[in-house]
Image (tube, rainbow, N blue to C red; front, side):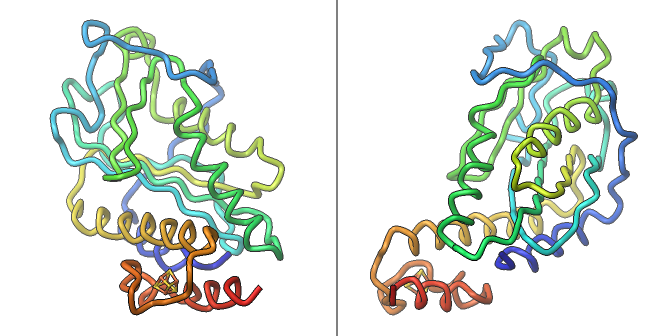
Length: 231
Ligand code: SF4
């Protein structure tokens, strides 16, 4: 799986100044059901109050990640009100011969965002506009929780999948290049939409397809559709 490689590299280059967080030994409790944090119990919402907000997940089989959590901007203890928020998850998976199988794994990894709840954090995610707003509870802030703790907890969950080889998570709470990152995240999302379309056995007809722009840009998408359409 190389389709996302250029987009992953573009985001990583844009986040060059992000600092790697010291690996956290504190694993936060998780559950399969999103916990509810009421406004009265919320310290602040990452991406709340219509602040810039973007979230993206991209998969590859041939970039080896550092299994680290990175942060650009303030950590949780410094944030006093709703703030901008970016979250980028990059995952290296095994190289499967079967593209359909690879796509199923991508869907499985994407679904974790909706099915995993971390204590003290309530996620409100929308795949449609790539926003992922996260309420952080007053209790979590008081306990001194950090992005290292939160990110490490998420990282551990991704690494539990037996086909995941490595991963990296970037958090951003201070953007100076939001438009650029948002535009690359949009391309990642469009690439996944194109894969959805391709594996839905939709006819190979680029002249009538609304995904033509992304398929013209991302190497390999057209070839993949042609190959699957022939099967
Ligand atoms: S290859 Fe053509 S038909 Fe297939 S998803 Fe891309 S634009 Fe659409």
